[in-house]
Length: 50
Image 1 (cartoon, one colour):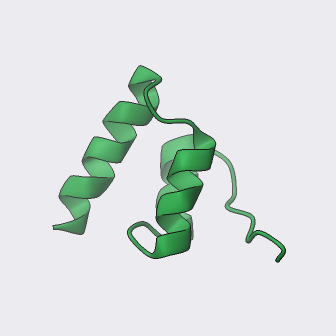
Image 2 (cartoon, helix red, strand yellow):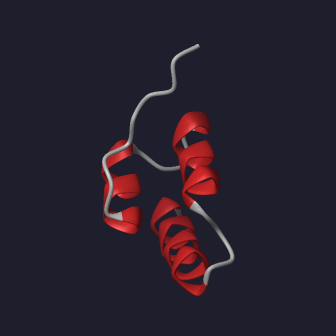
């Protein structure tokens, strides 16, 4: 199931409908992981400082 979500997130990011902040929010809630973030955006995921 998560692979489908990752594929959609990738497509939406590539189409410009999602930005890096949205993809990062999916990592924050656990829907994607840091490796997925890097694969989708090309950048390393930086854990936000609270």
